[in-house]
Image 1 (cartoon, one colour):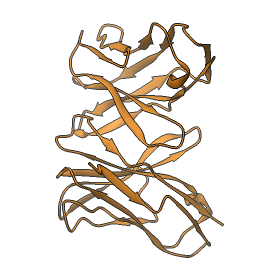
Image 2: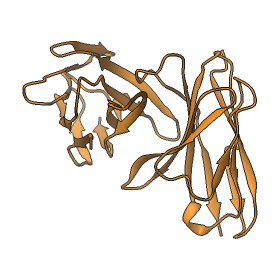
Image 3: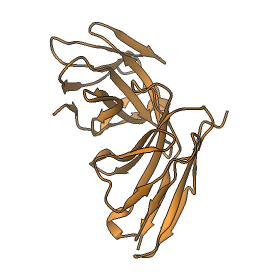
Image 4: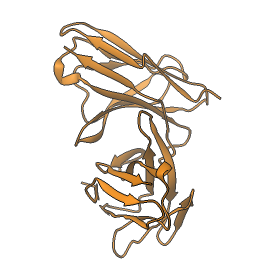
Length: 113
Length: 112
């Protein structure tokens, strides 16, 4: 079945460092891809999404490009801040039901001042 | 805008007790779902609903019931709490699927 694999955390960076969180997927059909962020003690929030190959989603300085040839959707940011410390989840729409999401296990990011 | 409201935020139950976790949304979203989040296991879908009067099971439905009598409300009932149900529970809603979910802030449940 469809699945999402994220790089394991925790990831620890210094402020202003570059961030890449890897996400690869296996899927039938043409899913939409998402990154969600969960700040400590809160629910998840949609960070960005891409609905077709070569689309780039972006928000709050984060970017991810839907790469069908490598089945990847890596999350990147050029300069992280302490406030970016959170858990990041990659997800894709279920082939059988596009209202449902298939989730990665999440990657914890800690940014130190 | 309230978005998705979950109550309570924290709850401690004894084994065998029952309770209802409340979820309400004010965005007229037709799709609602319940997840549990456990360390190292990510998010797992318990039940979901595509509209009032329609519910279906997710990955881990055992021990939980849901109903959807209105568009706004989607309560999750624990029938007889077990320590394995200790978790953080999230409710989420969406207007047209495609992954644009709005999440509640969660209910942290401990079963002793």
